[in-house]
Image 1 (cartoon, rainbow, N blue to C red):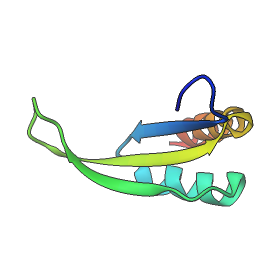
Image 2 (tube, one colour):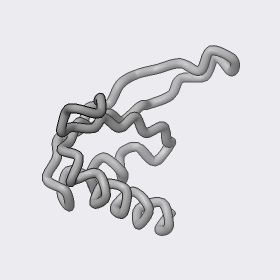
Image 3 (cartoon, rainbow, N blue to C red):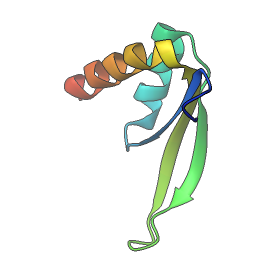
Length: 72
């Protein structure tokens, strides 16, 4: 969240939020939160995945996210 702390926060915007959240939960063993949002320009509803993790877990989260998006 800032340079001194040892944690990071991810905001992931995707229509495939269920698959991504499940993969992060199972493979990285991190809890996720799904937020309801709305695109202000489009006025369309959107789901936002939020994850708070240790800095050293961020690479694994990015890898899992990439794997999940490659399968879609």
